[in-house]
Image (cartoon, rainbow, N blue to C red):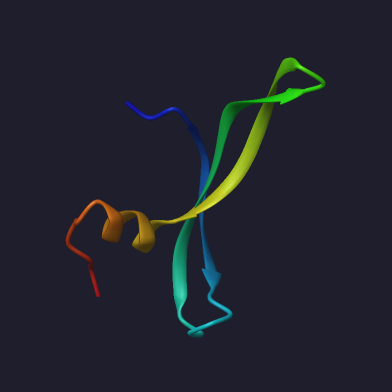
Length: 62
């Protein structure tokens, strides 16, 4: 089970290789400690799908 919510999937030109990659914009609740007190907050981040597939050993489409 995932601990994030998918907001949207977008396509972005990679600044390193110049190719178009699918990127997921995700949201989750994260926690940290500030002044000895646990604080939770909403975190929005981006995940590149090709990297996620490589880590999970899934087949890559060309």
